[in-house]
Image (tube, rainbow, N blue to C red; front, side, top):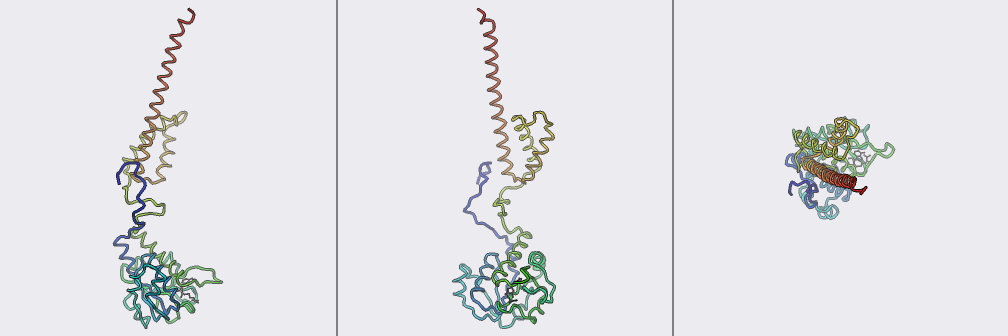
Length: 296
Ligand code: SAH
């Protein structure tokens, strides 16, 4: 890609997101533990949610049914997660090596736990993950997590739902929790190159203060050429332009595009002005030439 002002659009063939080493390592600290899942489709939904959010480690404690072939049939392109999934008979064995065990539950009061909502828990858990693995524990579809499992957890995460109908489907609860973990990792490690506006922030460096000043110099000339300062103080109007344009947080390539546009305006206005001056001169010469000869 050239650095010309016209090449601002990025190629659509490039990947949507590029996980950095540090971001991937942080996500790899999270271990998803499904406690006695009853339904294969729900396991598949959790696996799919893990894949979507970049989590890779799955442990199942006494699942009612586990069939890797059928799970990957439902959640496509998740072989690496399902093949590496670990099966345990005992919950304690599944979480033996982790430094923090996080329960997820719809029943915040019954949990008898320090509880928080996923968006609050995410950043804290990502910070804690620097010290070791973290288990995100999900309960069985019909009964949730029993008290003896909740007792073993350090904290609970509750998704605030309608109190009259608090329980989410297992896969839906999972994706909300995983999303908040990913979001927290992203903001800690700049995981994505592409931000929500679709602009690739990392590709063009930020403009320096000097470049910005140079640009505003050209902009002022352009606006002057357009007659924008007639009857007003240029400094006041320029202050407004500065405020508006700085708010858009342009990177260097975008700044160059606008600067090139401003130069075009300057050159265009100069040409028009020269043409008008030329025409006025011709007219003046004609009328002054006509003056003395007309009475004859
Ligand atoms: N009848 C069960 C429902 C369990 S749903 C109960 O009352 O607990 C299966 C699992 O999804 C739960 O054990 C929990 O891990 C997760 N889950 C469902 N709704 C949730 C919510 N609102 N907040 C956090 N986790 C939830």
